Length: 100
Image 1 (tube, one colour):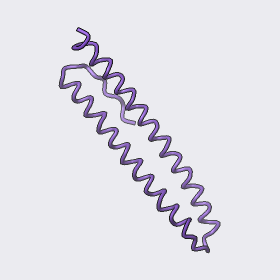
Image 2 (cartoon, rainbow, N blue to C red):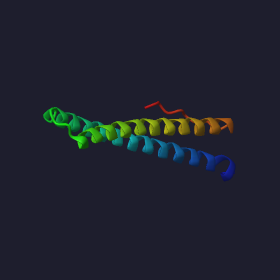
Image 3 (cartoon, rainbow, N blue to C red):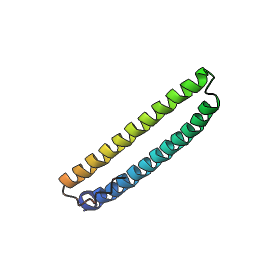
């Protein structure tokens, strides 16, 4: 009984909790990148007459980080949806979380 009834439910809850944790971590990284971007923008204003290569590279890297974080968040959401679909296909009642 455990293998067919309880184990999938326990694993489902564990996977949902881990997915939420990953999404929370992604949001923290995203917020940090945005915060750093704000500081970079202030530096850019202060140094607007300077052709600082490092500042330009910093800006490009922050854009890259933001893009990658959004892509990662999309992948995690896709994985969560697929896991839920698979559990539902197997006949387990899974509550779909609100999309955050």
